Amino acid sequence: MSATGKINVQTENIFPIIKKFLYSDNEIFLRELVSNAVDATQKLKALSRMGEATGDLTDVTIEVEVDKSAKTITIKDKGIGMTKDEVEKYITQIAFSGAEEFVTKYKDKVDKNVVIGHFGLGFYSAFMVAKKVEIYSLSYKAGSQAVRWECDGSPEYTIEEISNRSQRGTNIVLHIADDCEEYLDNFKIEGLLKKYCKFLPVEIKFGTKKDWVDQGEKDDKGEPKKTEIEVDNIINNPAPAWTRKPADLKDEDYKAFYRELYPMQFDEPLFHIHLNVDYPFNLTGILYFPKLSNKLEMPKDRIQLYCNQVFVTDNVENIVPDFLTLLRGVIDSPDIPLNVSRSYLQADGNVKKISSHITTKVASKLEELFKKDRADFEKKWDDIKIFVQYGMISDEKFYEKINKVALLKNTDGKYFTFEEYQNLINTNQVDKNNKTVYLYATNVQEQHAYIDAAKSRGYDVLIFDTMLDPHYINHLESKLKDAQFVRVDGDTIDNLIKKEETNSSKLSEEQQNQLKPIIEGTISKEQFTVQFENLNEKDAPMLITRPEFMRRMKDMNQLGGGGAMGFYGQLPDMYNLVVNANHPLITRILNEGDSEKQTALAKQATDLALLSQGLLKGESLTNFIKRSVELI
Ligand code: ADP
Ligand code: MG
Image (cartoon, rainbow, N blue to C red; front, top):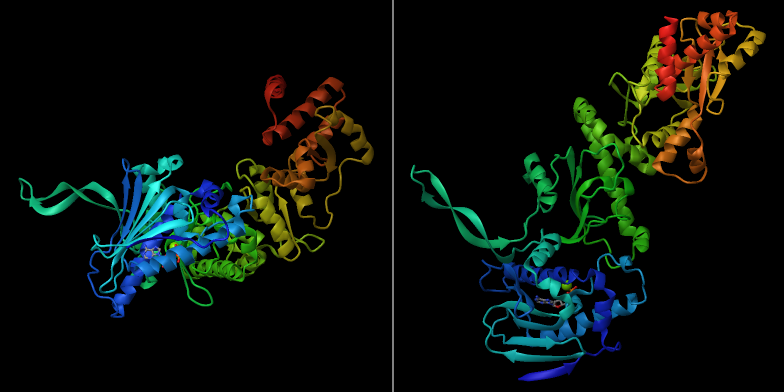
């Protein structure tokens, strides 16, 4: 008996709206229909465990088929199926009202990205790509009559009982719309299945493939021989690592799963964290620490978000803290609301809890690694520090949790915790204002002379050489008590850590005023400020330094940052030319009677200082070499 019915909706023809609204994202129809097939299969398994369903459960593989000539895509499951009444109820009434609610709620939203999951649209997402949908179904219930339902995208539908179906379960047949024929392509569908269904808990078959299989045959030498045969092309791994108990997994399993997630990644992860929470929210997952390059680039292999093993998105912004998006892996939680806008997500209580839980987990994992094997932790530090620093800067709670194990590295390659380092420098590197001065270098080669000078005073020099370091240093200054960070070439070493004045000057003020214009004449006045310092006579005669403040502003500007920093970024590079008033060479320049020789000597001395900073280039360098030869 066949009947037609009218779907009871207020919105006339919601299908065109569904179609138009979700056009850009219409590929999710496949995820929705396959996950319905999975649900139906899981329900049957549960009923069978409770003894409420009988029948064969050995093969419950879901099949997806593309028929190019008939222009259909079919999704077949061997799950619980539906009776005629159930189709009426679940498909025409409930699912439809869900879809209608969805449409009325979101049709005015211009920005399509506000909806991340589109969950809730479910079955009716089929109409995003199909001009007609058929359902063939037979319920698991004993004595059921099979049913056929058909709808062409208007509120009218046909439903009838049929007698030629003996297979339990449901076939959904999509008659693909003319403007969606791209979906009638095997590669396209396989790609979508791999994207959305890779870890669904029921096997999904998409056609067959050739594979080399050991079938017990032997070759000429009697060795086992593999034969190439057609086998089912199973898309998914129904039991991915994150759904299994950590106790059942070895390190190798975690690494294998990493390769499964990111087949194009050749680096091994440094370590992993297995997440497993069931109260007050549900969350499982595995996070990996990858080797990160020094650059803060947008990672392309990102954390993937799943909902009961259904892929949702790899854009986890607002769900995990920003700094954790540098990690890789999966998070699976049915408690993340998926059909709401992203701005709403940030305010969601569960999402906040999840985010802070993950932060805590990551921090305690790092602490555990530090305590368990300090040497190994140090070995990994250079690879994880950019991530840890990013977290410390952007997340106060993370800073509090992690600051006991965060490391500083010095120019000798030794690592210290903050506390250890404070103990190391807290007597020697304290200036007359009681500030502890942390010296740092950004390039051991280029700043070698300055590092050397610092070491000769018994000081220690840290190394900070990443893009993020200028920000990190600012942050540490605000956190560590009475700490001041200065770059080792920011000034003369005795000016960087100012103790009580000791050195007297060999040059009177009058002599300095006499010499100043001569030295200024040898360099560009816009770029260099000449200043006299009473350094040790064994120090260099002239030095070029770059004020810490100016340099930091410039560095930060490179990382991006508007406002005042943008302004500093535009300024030309400015340096100090420090003249060591106590150096014999300076006295010699002053006392040189022949003005031509005096200029040459002064020029030679400034060029030497420029040379040691790598600032002497082009014509100036050529002239310097010529002049040197003449002087020799
Ligand atoms: P949801 O999956 O969120 O319940 P859907 O719109 O995807 O919403 O599906 C609506 C209902 O239709 C399901 O809850 C289920 O009862 C029924 N259904 C859909 N697909 C199948 C299927 N393949 N087998 C059995 N029942 C199904
Ligand atoms: Mg569904």
